[in-house]
Image (cartoon, rainbow, N blue to C red; front, side, top):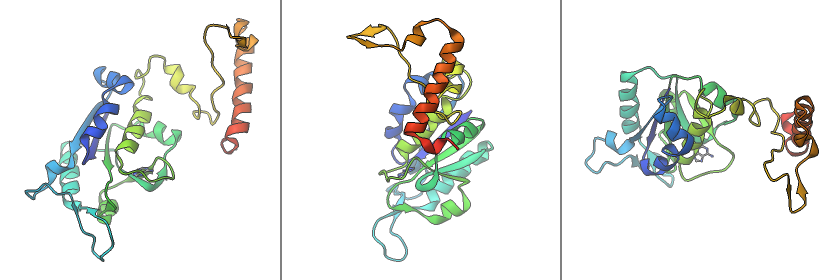
Length: 224
Ligand code: ADE
């Protein structure tokens, strides 16, 4: 899999992309992540990527030309499954979206900035618009890092134990059961007895009951 991220703030993405699981997945050759500085695709000497909006509103607008230059160059090199724009008015991202995007071969993710983006980018160049939640951030970089993380950890081999990605909260519309480690008794705070019983079937039943209970209590919307 290959992910190309287009941004005016490449430094903001370097941290999340080059550590932990995302770094390991790249080192293992499971994914290539390329970060492109939008300013490298401008044709003016000040490398400006924004301009005033037609109509006289306040704020600046990301211009279409550098974005089109960058996306066109990438598309001339390979085919892309999707060109994604990170925006608070996009489709709210969830685990199902992560699952389906993790099957892609090549993805472009465009990070928005300033007040907005020339709408022709969204009309002609973008195939999916994604929001990470109903709140507005200063730019699309952190959302792009979040979506990239959610996708890459699902690629087989990216996390040590494949079973653990499949058993994540949300994979089956249930939250996870509680999990514990040693010591079994810490200051009198005890681990549930059943987990120490060694009785595999009882443990799985207990986990399922707990998952249903926690989902009912914390996220009833997930139980259709
Ligand atoms: N850019 C700014 N806010 C955002 C959000 N909530 N989701 C995706 N991109 C964004």
